Length: 245
Image (tube, rainbow, N blue to C red; front, side, top):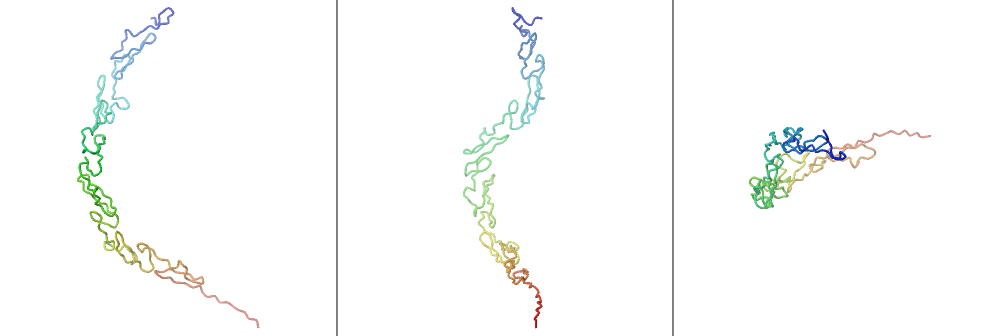
């Protein structure tokens, strides 16, 4: 079989006129042969074998979709929130405009979030925000209930009540907060301690070291006590004196 013709045998004979490529394949002429360039759905020498797209890696169906092979194609059953032939399209949950006018809808997978303007709250921004009126006192943080729009105040230490306006009397709500017999005095939002002799600190928790200033003299040893100290003196030493007569 001749593969070339022409005066100098310079022309490659086209083997494609009687090709056997099927299913829309493109014939690619070679030297005394041809190859079939198959479309994505077909394979084999003459493109007669169906490609099982469900066995390809990565999976033809994206985002958790279930793949079902068919002759000359495939079908995808998408999980909630996705669509398209290969489940690659995120369904726009904001298309129905679920958020209250004036708010911003943020699309997510099988869900959406409404970003509310000032003064509005709730899942759809449909509730008046009770925190707008600044009901919480004493610097308390105000949180809004997303279901009913009511406010909740997270009170700082020393305050209580629905708006944190009530002072807590730390001196009577439980055990004496002042240690070592200290006297407790309530203040606005806090308390102070009047310490017994020998103690100091915010809660009278520190023992004062009376020996810190070294009050003992003549190399005596100082023993710290509660509100006092004791000096242990050095023992006397006898000195022998010799007198010449």
